[in-house]
Length: 114
Image (cartoon, rainbow, N blue to C red; front, top):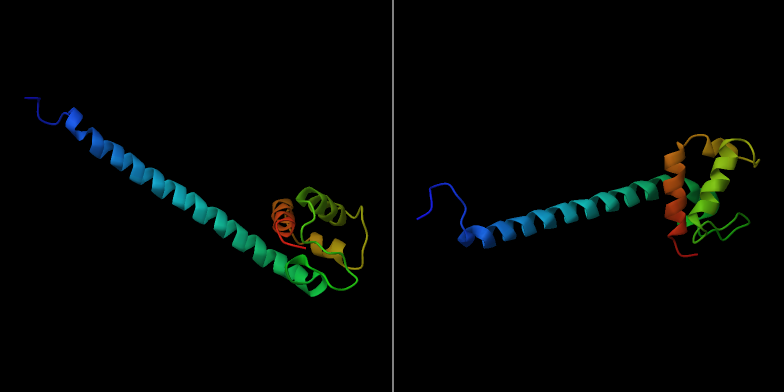
């Protein structure tokens, strides 16, 4: 007999199942977190729709944003924000966002179908 309160080999499957269950919870939480980020970025990007079309798929004279490389879009947004690039209103819009928000907006548009 083993002393009370010690874990024997017979408890190992229970320990393994517990670890597996906890791992699943952590992975599901991480997935939900990334979905939340996408929803937030999508809501920010919706402010671009009046000029650049839904999900950045412009059908008018303004550039299509959907499908363009995220780093390219992010760089352009930073140029507007710092007044290195001028436009009718883009430099004013870009100044309203933090750099991290601009990066996420660029990533959102890059992931969209043109």
